Length: 403
Image 1 (spheres, one colour):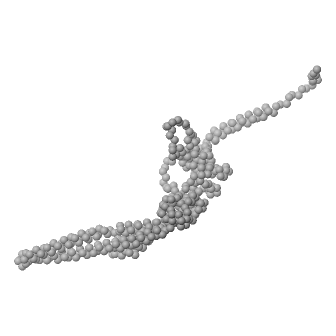
Image 2: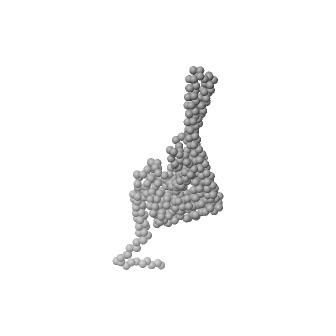
Image 3: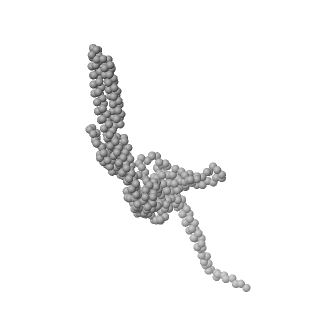
């Protein structure tokens, strides 16, 4: 028989304890609602003005070092990873064959100068011959006129007068031939001096080219950078255009970021960009800006572009390369980047004043080097020396090297 416990009359009954589960559930709902509201406010105020991608990689110039003549490698002064400066010697080639060509061209120039001197002498000789022939004509004409007067009086025979006329005709023919020879000789040297004669210029050009070949046996670094991909070996017989090594200027790298086409709506040239590299993590943020927006998707420039007009078609969101350049070169000195490294790019879309495409053509070379400009500095002096040693400067001539 069960017994029921009953509270005595007039006793106060305590309420049951509140459930903690309901409290935490309400707190969680409140947090989620506040988070959703906060995210929504952030997105519409600031978040929607950023686009990012991790399909971005470091790229840069790879300056190929190639020979311009066939020769044997005598020395290699830089290896992979070495820092080189513009103008440093990278490879030295055998210059024996090139020096032989210089000697041959120097001898040819000397011979040409002497031959051209002969042309000037021919002009002087032809001019003297014309004067002699003119004197003979004057004498024959005077003799003929005198005999003609005598023939009228019967002092001489008609036969003697005929011989005088033949002599005059022969002298006039010789004078005409001499004048023609003088004209021909004068045309060959007209309005020139020895140094500016076309034949001398041609021979000088051959000597200049031979000196250039000697200079080309020393291969210089065209830019500051780091050596990569060295394939040349000592004693190797290299051919023109063969890749010996490369120089990479790491202080001039950029980022090629591949954004989805749906992310390009508000992108403009010049917008600021934050870049983080996997090698340094998110603590190192590089500052940059958009240099250009690609003129086509990656698939459009592939070797085998997609043929969307054939077979079944499936729409695929395309990616367009966006070039990002760094605005603070000092960051690259402190934390250098290497070609091919993975990065994450975040573009701020707040500024909408930029252009979608470039509006002006470049007015200056994007990349250039002057390391090859001085290879012929001594050529003109050498040519002038050879001409001076073999030319006799005549009256009215000026000694000068061909331009």
